[in-house]
Amino acid sequence: MTLSKLNKHLGNSKERMQDPVERLRFALDTMPNALHGLFNPPARARILTELYAALWGSNYSLFLAPNDVLNAGSLLSSAQARSSLTPHDDEESKACQHVFKKGECCFRCKSVISSFNFLGTSNTSDLETVPWMIAVLCGSCDCGDPEVWRYPINCLYHRGNQEALEPENETKSSTVPPSLRENMSRVIGCALDFLLDVLDYSPEETHLPASYDALASQLSADPLQKEYWAIILWNDEKHSYDEAVAHLRYMTGCNQQQATAVVLRADEEGRDVIEVAGDAKRLLDTAHKICTVDLTVTMRRAFDTFREHMAAVIIEWILDLLQCHVAGDKTMLRELVATELFSARGEDSGFLYSEAAKLYPEANAGARLDWLFVYHPRLWKRPRLNLKQIYITILTMSQKNRLDVDREAETSIKFFALDLFTVPSVASHLVRQSGVLSRLLAVIAGFFTNQIANKRIASPPDFNHPMDVEAYPFRSKRYMPIFSDIRYICNNHSVQSIISRDTAFITEFAVVCAMFTGIQPNKRARGNHVEYESDSWINVFNVTLSLSRVVKAF
Image (cartoon, rainbow, N blue to C red; front, side):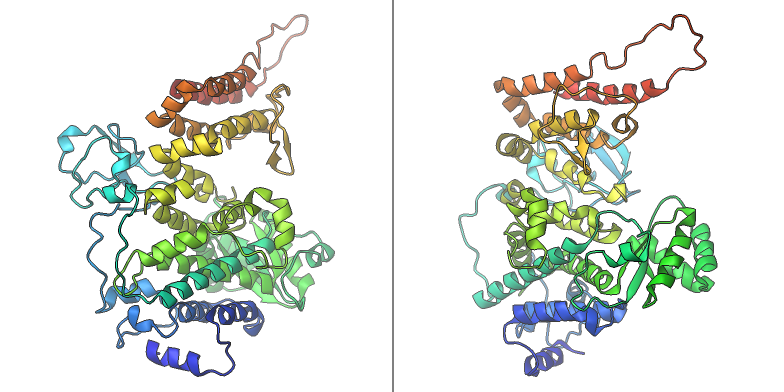
């Protein structure tokens, strides 16, 4: 269907509301029951159709040429890549923004502040580089970003955009009507609010209910509370394809093709629906059988599962907008997305908003971006990676955006700190205005003294609390990114200048270091023969080794 026919159909429908935002919200709220909780490619295509139609209204000619076709389920950026309506050629001076993927080969340059960069420079003889293989999905290319380089390298592909670091004094003329700009802003805000409303109901843990009563007591946004359920397989790194496929076939009775399709989608997307049906007890029994080999399976109402997949499509749509242009302007949609991310969430956006605000007061006082950070563990592989790419794109737009800002460990938001803490302006701002250095030191103190309740570290912690080297914190490896974050921050000259002028930072760091002094003294055994000694010293050695690296950077 062509865009002109699509918009004519949408505009002439008497069943639709006049305001595009109200119309979009109504469509999103009613779609799970309208499609019977079954998420599939046609459902994804319908979600995208509603989002794009609300975004452009009757102005589709500013996005695509009249004879262009946006196929059902296709993204606008792919259609614009084939369109005769092309963007303005003014992007050559912008940063590369390439988000590194696991397994990609790049270079770590010792002569620059940045952590990773592609070697696309004409001054190769002046750079001391080390080949580097990306182990986790984090970091972005620094080419074209002058702040992270100590001197110009004359990249062959990206030129330094010094204007991005300075306030904009002139307003560029635009052919986009102000009414369309306002409408696009409201539509993006509406989509983000719906996304957060969905995540209000999503659990943080992938636990399978033990009984039907526990299953029925789960939070649900379904106003009808339908007895229609979905069992979901989550991706893990414990099982091979063949093991997972064989087990699914044996426990569910599906054929080889069906089981393979589920496992492959779970690996690619992070999770996939195994079955949707109304017999809750049978599905729960099947789910428990699948779990016998330690496969991660959850079960929820099909209504809520469908809404979570809608949230993933919205994240995909937001990422797509960052790669699109309006009337040739490639920065407008990026600016609108950034503005809405940094804007406060609508207070009446969802039924659970007030309860969620009590649980996460730090997010309630912030922007939509704060809520997305808090809710990151509730998502799965694909939307997590898409969100990280959204954050990096917004981060590299300008200095203003920079300063505003588990189950699948490699997609965790904690690795996004690499892109924040290695930029001097960001690191110094966070140290001065947000006290991030003091917070990270407090996290270390609270974590290793095991001051953890309901999976949250006490704040502020008791620095005199005793340490137990046999406890979980010392056996865990989750502390490593925190030590790395402090090193990234302290390696910036701007932060070193702040620390040298304020003795409070040195005092705080000395207190934390003192906590690890003499925590596992060697005691000579007297009287009794010792069959073996505890291997806890290995964990203590690893922790103190990480701490010593921080000491060198501090």
